[in-house]
Image (cartoon, rainbow, N blue to C red; front, side, top):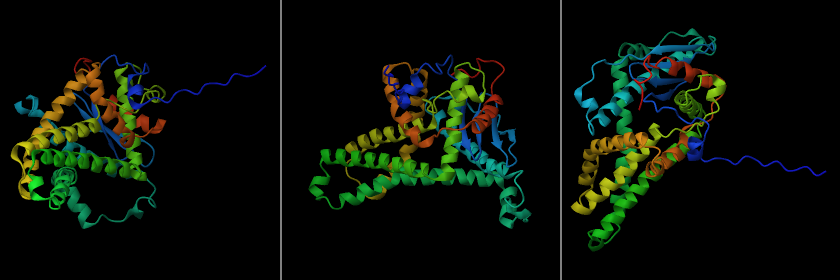
Length: 345
């Protein structure tokens, strides 16, 4: 008797994995996270906690202290986005630095610097950690703005010098140049993600990012938070920060194109200033879109908007192992509220 050939299971796309029956969410949670050095930070409705795998193999969990004071503006639509983004960036930067220290604890002395005395720089950084964290967060914002916002415009302004002046001032040319700027912005962002994902240390962080998504998906599905259960879920999540970054870039193309058509050709420094001034508005609009899409992700149009962000997560997440998942579980369990309704999206 001839044996029937077994059919290989079809490989699902990121969108199909999110929409599949495995992990059909019974709720959408506001709990979100961030990958750290050998760890994960989870932000819940009332607590923010991080879990890090120490050098001796144990998991260290601690609460990340934040200001309990919440201003009225943090809940105001089209204002809250910028405030929350900045606070999250500062908190995330501090947690990243802290996780680097914790991950070294418990390592053998030969792997941990032979017990050398801390340098003056290390002493200074420890004594002024809050100032260093704030400076690092601001520096990160400036580098991102320079690379993804200002550099594309600078390239386009250099290109216009080789175009006859009578053509540059035409409305259709303004439209073309602004669209080229937007495409350059997306290209630079994509190349950045692709090259970063190839670095060994970064890939390790991406595994923790994937574990964060899987753990949240398991929690949303109402299953017990065990490594075996969590590993069943896809590493892609529709309400990820990667999606927010894509929305920011997409909205920037629309806004800068509209402004460019209306104001016409301007000197290089004017174009750069305009882009800097518009950044808060772009972030504010993008945040509200992310909130809306996350709330209506069963809508066909909203699902379409989620697809680019899910696709980009192929470069910002990687499949974790059970040990990495255990760290993400420890972090999530520390922020789950007693009242299950407190973290509903």
